[in-house]
Each structure stands twice: as C-alpha cells, then as structure tokens.
Length: 247
Image (tube, one colour):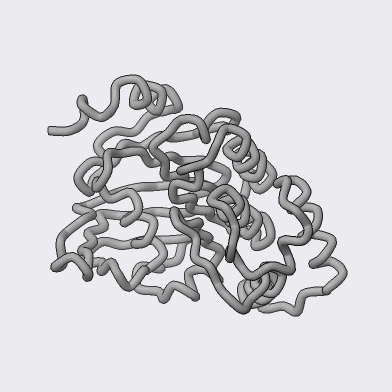
C-alpha cells in the first residue's frame, strides 16, 4: 500500500529570496519500504524533508503531498507529526530546563493523545536506551544539553523508537558519527522497521545503508529526482560520485 506520495512538488526558500529549490519532485514510498535520497550539496535533500514536514522556511508553490491517502500538503507541522511522520535533524536542538524523560513522555502523549503509564513508559525507555547503548542517567539530563554529536543522534533514534511513527525521515543522521555509532543507529532502524512503517534516509554515505534492506535509492540533483534504482545505485554513487548526473 502506498504510504507517501509526492506529486510534482515545487518549493521556494522563504529565507533565501524565495529561491526555488524543489522543481517538480516526484516520489512514492510504499508501506514496509526503506528509500534513500542521495545527491550533491545544495541539491534539495534537506529541503525535501522540511517540505514534507511543512517547515515555515520553505513554501510549496505547487504540487501535492499525500500521506496514507490523505492530502497533507498544507497541513501544519504539529498535525503532520500526529498523523505519524517523524523527522530527525542534522543538528538536533538543545532544550534547557527540560529533561530527556520529560520530553519523551510529553511528546509521546501529545502524539498519541493518550495518558502514558509511568511504569510502562520507564520500562520501554530503559529497554530502548539499553539497545542503543545509552546511559540510563541521560533521562534526567536536560534534553541534548552537553550531549556529544553521537549522543544527540542516538537520542533522535530513541525518539523514533518511542513514538513509533508510520514514516521516519532521517536527515543525515549518520553525519559526524564513528563506525560504532553508525552501527548503533542501524540497529535502532532495524528495531523500528516493520511491514507497516517506512523510512526515508537522506545521506551522503553508504555506511548507514550497510545492514539495512534498501528498497529504492534516488539521486536528487537540482531539485528533481534524476535517477532511481536499487542498492547498487548507492554503491555506484559511492564509487563515482555524481558526475554522471550533473548536467
């Protein structure tokens, strides 16, 4: 079943003199699939993620985005999250005065609309943190404050595991991570993955793709997907770069 469908979307950057970034992008992701977006710097990869999530920095000028059969093109970001879409960030924010446990609990309750059992919440949090090799005392620390780059990225995966979205968009979650941290992130992705949810991975590297069952790889250049293929396409990009796709 089709989960996400992007049809001829055009997006301009509100904070960059309304420069057009996405120029008629099309993409379909079915339930249970892992898709990968690769492309040179400035091609529109992060813009795509922010466009799906209705970031106010990016304005859709035409086209549609459908999620689970519903048009979400002009839906507000918080409502998109409640529909079951999650996005990790390249540079996760720090939130002073709010502990990791408080953030996870309030976010989970906001998304589900249900009161969370303290016992079940603690049990689930500890289990997931253990899987990600995160220290349990992190739950009492301010959200991302004083966390290393790797710890912040693990925190993003922890949120994904706790919130259980239908679609997870991982925007360069692997950037700046060492080999061991990347393996932990991959482990988290595999723990999350099932035949009803989907993942869109935005990356420059094939390291995070190792150990994952990749269904489709897309090359994004100048605001459009110019080539799609299987995992072998990612290996070709890793070897040869984007010279064959840049006009």
